[in-house]
Length: 340
Image 1 (tube, rainbow, N blue to C red):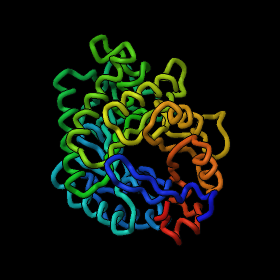
Image 2 (image 1 turned 180 degrees about the vertical axis):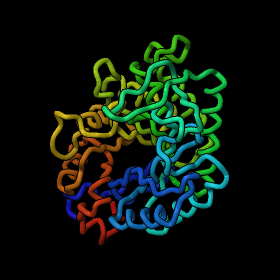
Image 3 (image 1 turned 120 degrees about the vertical axis):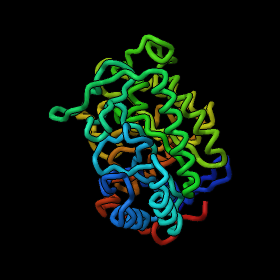
Image 4 (image 1 turned 60 degrees about the horizontal axis):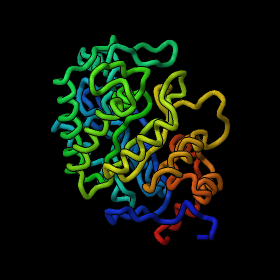
């Protein structure tokens, strides 16, 4: 390892868990589960391949916490006892190859269709999720206090299931326009009670769920994927995201994964090159003490090293380039990056 190979340096979290380097394989939907949300042989094989690059942490794709939170017909589930064996096999596959195993938990909220969600479209208020032209979503159905209690229970149950399955890290998906993101954004949360309106009110439901999940996952790593901004007019901003990150840190979250918001995961039109969401990661990393994961088209070791060396981020997620076999990093593969 040279003095410039910052991506190879290890990181020890406050719970004593050590990441052998600074590379993350992020959660990426595969649509390889069966119609009931069970992992298939194709799902398991996929994660065997994703571990080959030598990343420190491999995150299993977004997994729904309840049928009402499905956002595609072949989405992986973490919602029922029968999902356990597949989730455990995925965790074992990742850990046996030297990486920490993480799983991303999600409820789609209003970003779904009735045929996928069992008929119910659960949203904070009356506003539909802004999505790409040509795509449809179901009609919003504002959640009651009883519905909110169900969400708390579903996230808690799925977290317990994931911990028992052997995962080192739990990530809550509060970005890309999915359910928890909808509570955070002024574009989708038009409630008039204690969970809508002001910034603090819009943060409230996510923070409650984080508190529940943090208690259940004590001793494990907890990450929250948040939006650096909605990238939509009158949507959430980077300043608001940084305040949220500070609140999450105060609640014991270990990692902030900075992505995009209601505009989806796709590249903003005006951004070019690798690291197109690095400005948002940098802004947040400079305002919190826990590590940030930066995302956005990274695929070159030199670019990743520079982002980490400058303190713009602590970890970098490389997704599509690894999935498509375009990320080549001989040092990472050969060394395992076990020395800091």
